[in-house]
Length: 187
Image 1 (cartoon, rainbow, N blue to C red):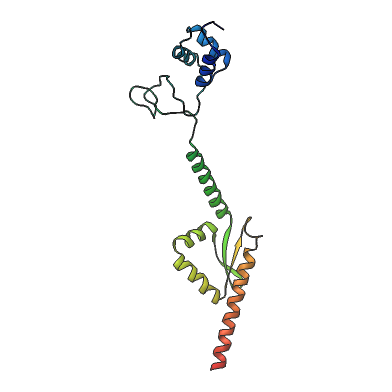
Image 2: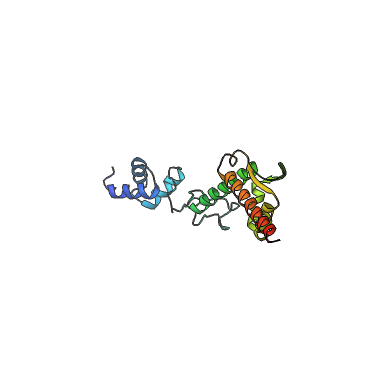
């Protein structure tokens, strides 16, 4: 090391410019210990690596976004997408996966031993979200008119959901039967 360059200077430059000890020492020796000149030299040589929250003094073409007319980039830390952006992408991928699964599986309405209606689970979810005041009563009334509901597809067919649907249909049939018996006994 040069006599007027200290380990503290090398460490400070190394930390600030995110370079090796060797590069920091060489830059300081070449600039006579001038810290600013050493940083500029390292940037011109392309040896600096951006750190979180760091700013660059390199000139960039003003045609790129995120810059003012002078060509300097302000407040850019070059880390890529922000944490919020990554979470938003993750949420979007999860939503798209859910829609894809909903489109692969179907909701079926059965009556008199045959499938009367068949549509994707995604459509059922949309109906339940936006038209629940119509969808739920229609499904409930359908149970009393002999309709049964089933889920089919690779993800929902083997689950216990169809057992629940069968149980609801059986309960509705028993309730209908008991109402008819009470009506016949009172008449």
